[in-house]
Length: 498
Image 1 (cartoon, rainbow, N blue to C red):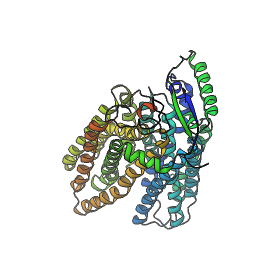
Image 2 (cartoon, one colour; image 1 turned 120 degrees about the horizontal axis):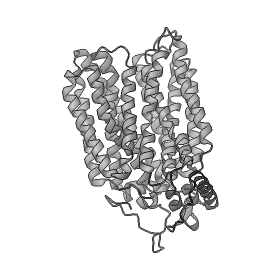
Image 3 (cartoon, rainbow, N blue to C red; image 1 turned 135 degrees about the vertical axis):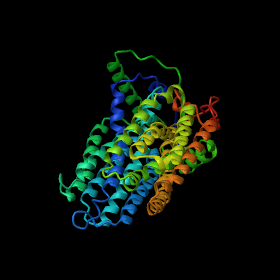
Image 4 (spheres, one colour; image 1 turned 30 degrees about the horizontal axis):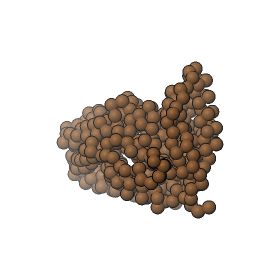
């Protein structure tokens, strides 16, 4: 059968039934099974940054030079970008569950092989594999979470889960303190054990994830409505048993023209032709948060050690990470109550202004005051940055969701993880030579300007998606219009759900 050919038409109430569910223990299984990938990413990024000195010696490490360390970071980022794009389109084509099991498996293999690295080339290849798994996870997981979590809770859960990256960052920072201490553990064993710990956590997640079902929304669009009905009925029975309450009936339905696959050309047209304003919005949000984090976090460790005479940065990074997670956790519910547009614009603009203020005050800050400044800035910025992922995952049609997440993640990660470090690395080098911390201030100002710009764009182009079912925010490409013509109906509003 040709790609994209209609296989049938159904009228379903599944979206309304999923969104009217009260919060129950079943939803925590989804959060634990799918959300912990960000903890893994946080551990990976922090451990690699903290282990750079342990990887340099010939005997106990891999004989890596400083440029090799930088190359390894770029390889990881490139792998994540390519993995997101590759696995993202497979997620939309073959289903959420197949891919979120596969991508976690890729990460698991990559990080285990990293622990057994015997030379630089092996290490680089393993970093690329690990990055590809993490990038693929972002696309598969965000799409699955949004399609399984009720509309009332979608914002806060998505933001808290994305913010859990910083739980991993904090844990990674603290773990590297004993693992890089020669008096505690053999240096060669220490850095290998650090990578192995990520694999142990991933294996536990894999076991929990087996209990997470396929997205019923994906199933009924792809001609598997009977399986979708069975899964939703089982979820409803479980939630009723756990809550002790009888679920209300629903009347809202959706008529779908089923397809086995959706052509990539249709997906591209959707993103850039039908929803150009939302595309601009997502690009602005992802690029802004990528530069913000690199402007501060990429220079943070060097600022502490090079300019402020801090010998052990792990505790400072852990405090910074804690503030990021607490911000996402405490502010997340406001994205569902106060609203997406106000909260995204507010967190972006406020954190951008505060970063600019920090840039002007750099010469007067101590290690403690710089860390406090960073904790305040990123208390707000973390929730905003997480909302960028939330926005990309909910404002485009279901058939394109995973690939859209992958595209914006890849662009933001490439800008922030490749061009950003190159620029900020040069700033650090020049500032170190001049022994003047204010030399990194231009990086702060650029990150601040991009965040403020992202917040302003959100004011004009943001979508009020709070409490709305995904199908109201962006009608599925396969959905029929109310008149049954099934033709247009995908016009893009600037402020209200489609």
